[in-house]
Length: 487
Ligand SMILES: [Zn+2]
View 1 (tube, rainbow, N blue to C red):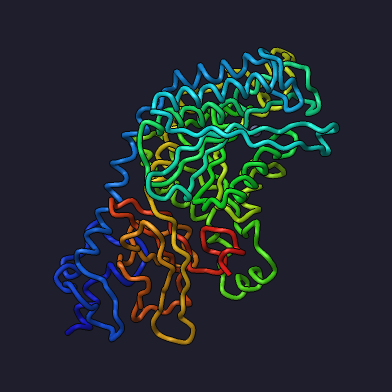
View 2 (view 1 turned 60 degrees about the horizontal axis):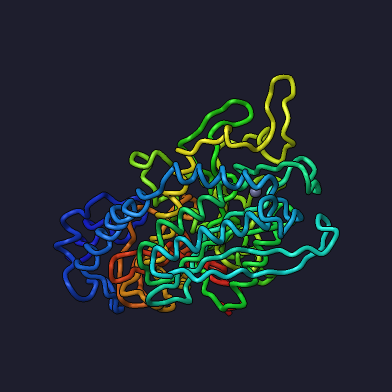
């Protein structure tokens, strides 16, 4: 009889996309206590299932409360102000009060200070700096990041970072003097970061949010590396880094318009992976399950395009072909990171001298931008930051299924989690299903009758308020943290 009951209840064991509500047998068959089929302890109860089913809609409802506060007008005003500094080239004047990167950085810092004043000094502003030379920096130049830290009320060492770069360039990356408006690249990302700080600093979160205005991107991702090194030196547990670079136009250089998608780029093989990890993944998989990739999947599931007018187009490569961004130094240190960028790029309007050729305008100016679109991307960032700042870290999970007809999944407990959700997807399925297999307060489960060879498994952590972390895959290299720390 028990065997039959299990088959009626398709939700917990089969993976794939389960129905919106569990079939009645799921509820009736599985009361409090042990799962009827296995002699091993498994704390799966009806109450657990209800909590799991409730968690996702609650999350979706909670997010727009912050995201709605994003202002397209403020974003436009900020981008115009940034353009007003003439050039923000990394080697432009650090001291001129009106023109150059120094003035721009000072202004950004003042914006953070104003947000902090409005929340009772809830932001700590730091300005990590380093002096670099390199292929695109012939003389020693100071790189300064402007960073506001909103410390979490419960686990301040857990951080989620949102970043954009304030420096700009024209056709010749070494041209320090020409006007380089950088409205979209990356005035858009900088304005997004400042707006996220304004909106989210009005709320409290158990974990920390870091708002970062980076420098030196165009000269070689120096500001991103500076902040990644800073995060490591602080001993931060980095849950995620959102790099926003070119996020404010909806018309491509060929006239193609798309204001309903944002691209999210994520690496496959981990930037900090070594030969041993490569061998392990070659043997049992995991090359499509890096923490950055799971962050991308999670972001795609976060937005409801029917309501927000914006869907995530996941791009499963680290960045655009032949190009880079400030998320890469984070991934190189093993921190989960993604790049947000527009659906269609306008190549006439980035990295170009201001000019008109045969009636065609070139240059990164405000008139080529779409601030309603930038506001949508900002709302998605704000929603993602708020959700991550409430959620626990995804647990580091392992799976045991070799030469057996059942699968054991186990994970390390994480601070702030009251429950865990266990996920299962076919090895050739691109994403996790809409619902977990089960939730439990335990730190291991046995899935009877599940031949693990045919599936990937993952675990997410759930806070007391229902906030759920992204899924961490139970594969080699699947943990949300540097590889070294997981040995
Ligand atoms: Zn850029």
